[in-house]
Image (spheres, one colour):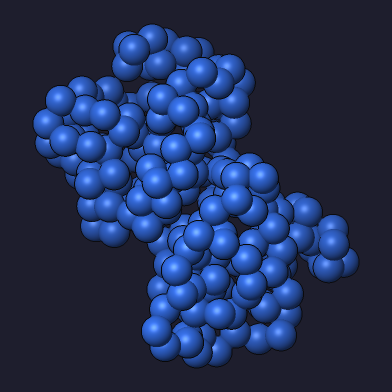
Length: 198
């Protein structure tokens, strides 16, 4: 399957496949060596699960991770991957065009989870014992609310009557202030900290 994905993604003009591996250990080693922008990680690997590798790749190597799953309906898996800092999910049953869109979106720092899945998961995220004081501005709180609805940067810009670049800057500030590694993780932190409501 990995070789098939290499061929499919490698045929897309704006995507360069720099490496393919088949284990957690090799994935971490190659990500360390090659420093890709995006890592497409399978959940089930011979020497462990992809979520363990994703956590290390996101935190230590600063690459966006898209989790490849057998099904997008496994909420427990999705929540664990979110907590590990994954940028999103693609089911193996999805069309190649969805996978291409996911890789492009992850590279641009976009959310890679459908609004319906996000809406289903947010109420299940447990609250932190102490509220978070992130020092977010009123505008950043407005942007965060739209992020929690699954809006991409263009949609945020449109709804708030601001430029896309300004929307991206607000998103980057929110992610940084919340100490997150991705937009999805920022939304999770905000829900847990009662900054936004699910």
